[in-house]
Length: 81
Image (cartoon, rainbow, N blue to C red):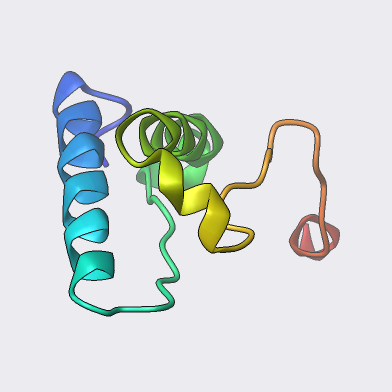
């Protein structure tokens, strides 16, 4: 990413299209995470990506735990910091 530049949002939208296409081609599991400089802004980009998946590819929810709300979730990884 480029610090949540407008191009980051456009690329995220393109990735959703690509992931949806791959799913249609038979790909079952994809592990995807956004990267931002110093990763400080990565949670905001992840949230935007989840919103785009819900908007562009709503059937993804029925395939399993694809979308998770990270805003209020610490998770195991946060214990590393």
